[in-house]
Image 1 (tube, rainbow, N blue to C red):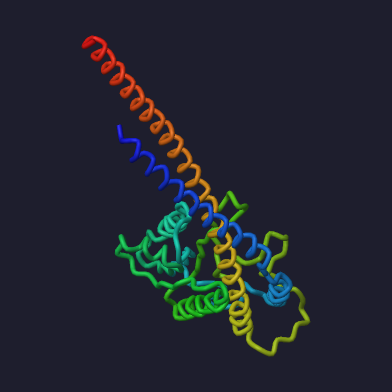
Image 2 (image 1 turned 45 degrees about the horizontal axis):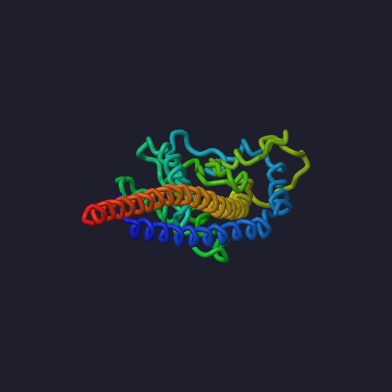
Length: 287
């Protein structure tokens, strides 16, 4: 059994480590609630832009944003974090993304340093982006949008799917999948249908394909920005949960060390008492 000094030293180490985890957990929790209050989804803007789709007979428009070529490669976008301590959330996102890479022609885009680390063990080529600072997240969304659009217009990919984390609560984080292209996948489950003409007396000064391209350009940037915000919120939630679990494990370790400490201390006391008793017995015999 380790000595009392060794056990005591280990307990002090875990005590300091637990205090550090509590600080990091408090920061992550504070960041979660702060971002939750500041998050903006611009519902009115999205609804306003989406309303233009109802003026068009979307199905009749020949454009890769509407009807990608049959059998075209799929673009998979995995949104991870630049930092760890998420309790396996990044691994789940990348595992889900890799499940869509069975076709070797599919293209992978990995956002976040942790996701790119995951790919070190694979021979699959991918395009990487860093998430960056929170205040630059909108610019990162636009950069990602421009890359996706250029790949689709060039015919390198057809449909595009985004894999990201979503925090249902501070304790629960889900891996979500969103079909971001073709745009016919965008309408929400509200009973409306973009594929029918809203009215007959609509005068279009631009070609419908040009209108679709511009509308998708506007909305995709906003959708990707929202996804990056949701992913960031899930990151803080996952980090808080993971640190809480780690703190509980450390408390369990300290409990076992506490028991070892007292067991070792009692053994030392018992040994000292036996030695004193033996010494006293020998002393009495000598007398």
